[in-house]
Image (cartoon, rainbow, N blue to C red; front, side, top):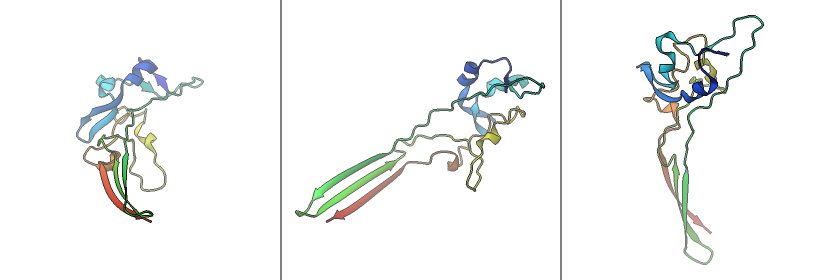
Length: 148
């Protein structure tokens, strides 16, 4: 890839979760202002003999907090009652992912990062109306165990 009018640090500073340009792409992971007026900050290498760069971008920070609490109550000498409370995604923090909704064994997020198509580059990381694009909602489970 060849950078066109931006540096690697400028490109990295434009990575995040942004409102998309329209309702079919409600959330994007590259700032749409970067592509304003037909601007293409990243171009494919098309000149023979020209070497491109491997540009690695880091996405928005992934936050997932799971909490587990146990209370053990002795009943008899060798019998106790354990009460468990488990909170998966305890703070209900959404984490957007780049998915292709492929039901097989692999996921190919690179198809959404097509540098030859400026309209789809950096678009469609997830639909906020579809929970499959995130890490899911908070889940709380309670459990009792009689241990002897």
